[in-house]
Length: 135
Image 1 (cartoon, rainbow, N blue to C red):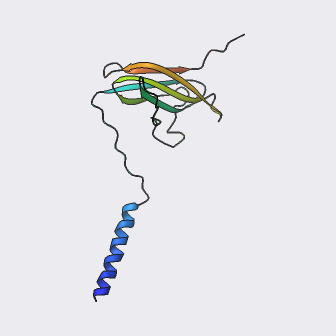
Image 2: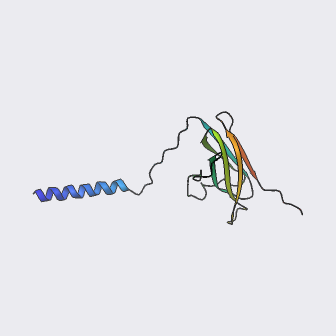
Image 3: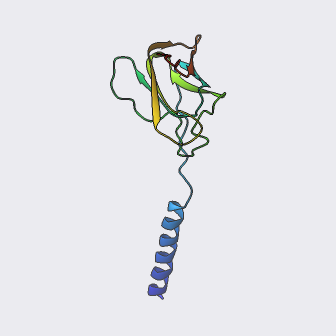
């Protein structure tokens, strides 16, 4: 009888530990900011923006992609589109990686430096294709 109880206990314990693992992705809470500001990226390029990074002024580490997703459509700003990102107020450098057209190809980087993001004044960065040099 005692062995039967231990066996049932072991099965229940294993079942609970497997249920805790589950297939669902863990819920990652949205970051909160004491002094939030907005960065709006406007895409007037011929191709989608596929990565977007921010780093505090004077630092060298770009950190993680601010899209925060691996999904190819959710993690882009399509031509003609825009997207807002929330950051803590402060000074930032921004880096966007985009495709030249809507077709797959190499990523092209654009950067902007020393942008002041405040709770009152958001940063608006409009990405446009570089003018073609006629020479």
